[in-house]
Image 1: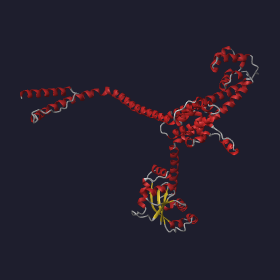
Image 2: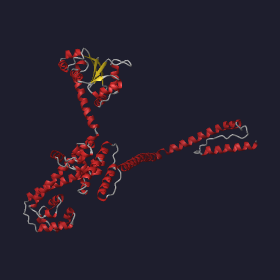
Image 3: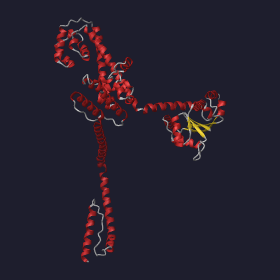
Length: 534
């Protein structure tokens, strides 16, 4: 059986005919030895046809199709033109060797051409790749390298560009940075408290918040300069006038030591850094909330933005989280405890990262495991909806949250919750209603724009429209006068039926112009006179 090799290069499709081979002695090691020498390899393979790509975009489309295991029309036409034709009802006396088994299976399904992909074929294709520029005389080695480099860059750019799920990398980085900032701000705030505590130790007991403490440390500077005039400014920082008075009184009777101006300047600079970090942390949290509302709105509305982002980052991506079953999602983040329990044959953990959700904290100690299992189930549904749905909505997340609330009431009070089927039907109805409203709003906006454009142009086109209307009226009057004798002739010819009753004739009157309506009434009067004469 003859063997043809299909080779997909960066510059085009090539078809080679492998002849002079014994199928029984297809030793891969012998083929590997013969590949290195071009003279020996050239005696085995012969170029049958070569079809270059028309452009770089065409090359990228063909490369994407091959990587996905799809046979394009260009490839099909290339194979049908250059391979021997097979008669109907007979088997082909040749086979095509391909590098991608998926492409080969589709070629055999569509065109009924037998394909194979094994070690022997792959070794032959490796030799073709090594000496490809020698088989095609018009192709230079530098041209092939440029084509490979350009196609490689465009293919990688397209893969990154088309992958929508890569956007969740921003959420992963944001939640990592948020956790790091929390640790750093906490440690830096403790350093500010300890450093400024040498000078004003009583301030630690009055102010508990780290951010407010850093702002007061920057504002107060030297405690000996504090007086009652500073109380309004301190009240603005603290938010409580009584606390501001306590700070002023504590500064008067403070047991702290005096600090030199240079040390105070360093303390103020460090306190300013802590303030800046705290403000940046707030902005980063707002950014995370907006990103989660775009990427995983249902998961965020169900379990919260921070916990949802931690689940996504721990799973690696939203797609990986959607692929996880509910049992895996339940213990996500407690892998060490799980494997330790499996090793020691102890009790496995009931929850992982979802423990930080408020639902498990609200549940009783007896029902925490049940609540974690139920919440993991709903989180799995929400993540799959976010990952695979086309519409960006929070309706499903809100309905799932209502279900979790109902389950909490069921555990505490015994109130029976709604069925999942009914809840999902209500969610789908609300989503369809929202889509209908959006579709109705879009044409209304377009019509408003058209009206505004028409109103703007009315003043300019008014005179032209009046002149055109006058011209059309004159033309219509002339036409009507010409048509009147013809109508009278038809009336005379079709005066009546066999029974003697006159026939009724339909007339078209244009009511927009006054002249036409008058002409119609005059013709009616003429008919009445003719009937009376008869």
